[in-house]
Length: 487
Image (cartoon, rainbow, N blue to C red; front, side):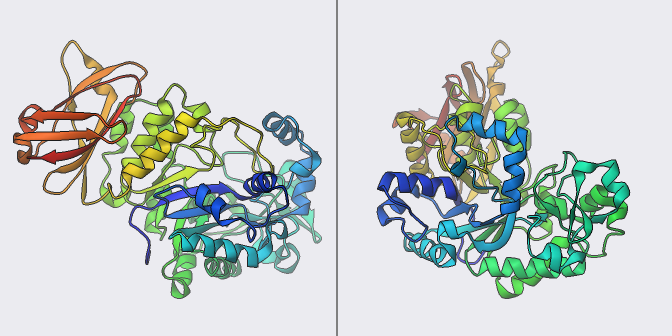
């Protein structure tokens, strides 16, 4: 992670529809090379360390044909974009024809210009890699048959939707073990030595164009998962795991590139040990969105060696929009939590404005939605005040209550500290008011303490916090982000 901060803030942009919106605003077509400087200034929030331009690679014409014919996909497209036109369907960025920047976006030279614009603002660039599958018209389907999972007519007859014919062979569609096959992609064989070498080369070529790489569905390539998914079709697993072999080769030429794993099924620790700098914290997302404060508190009891290598989010291109999925202020409570915890933070373009429509990645235009200016102001303030906060040590704090008032169980709290806390965070993860007393076991807080809530400017003067703790009374989904000064 040469040159990267330890807890980076990443901002994801859905590149194609974002450029469509920029073009509409300017009144003429736009590539990544043509984005005006003031637009880059506007789109990159203060405190951002890296921009993830999602979906820059060449999209597949064959995949586009599949998307046009798939009734389920078509329904989802029209639900998200009721006035959808044929030109709005541009194909999936995860059905990659070639790892070359799509000409619609301006090609490789335009990406280099965008990277330079970001670098001038002190911001790094992250791009995608899809290790599990490629488009059915990827050149390797014909040129490198050993890279793919192959079957026979019996497989095709048993599961017609799981296989397709190409270059005289029967090949598997890409899949994970828990869902039906993806009909627009061809499954790569993670056990094939040639594919592993090709993956390292492809990652090296991508790393030459950016500062970080987000690897799609990275857990599918681990030996155990891949063997369970494909069984006899791929034979016994190699002695060496896929990612340590690939990443080891990549690090020889690009030691400083940051690698982010999309990870599910509690495989974050495994992928961290296999070489990834950060892994998705989907489990925290699920707990913040659907579960109780107790589940969040239990999640945060993990060691810093694990938490520092997680990337926290409440929205990305795969998840529902936070303003829709976490209503009533739950989104703001969750946002304060992920912004102030150890590890990396991921924000998504449109999240700050309160967009509610989850756009399928196949589409190249956003629907018109009014911006929530109050929510935008909240996020801008949050990002401004958390800059530099996550330093020194972090500690999960105990919150106590009273026999006749159990609502303290809905409050989670933590502190960033060195000799004494310099910031204290308290969040009510419930839809009702909650009161509690936060234990602050620092002797230096026995005297007078001044607490400033950086979210709303309120000032609290308190004494004997180390003995009595900090009493909080929070409304539904309420939160404090307190700067601490002792005297």
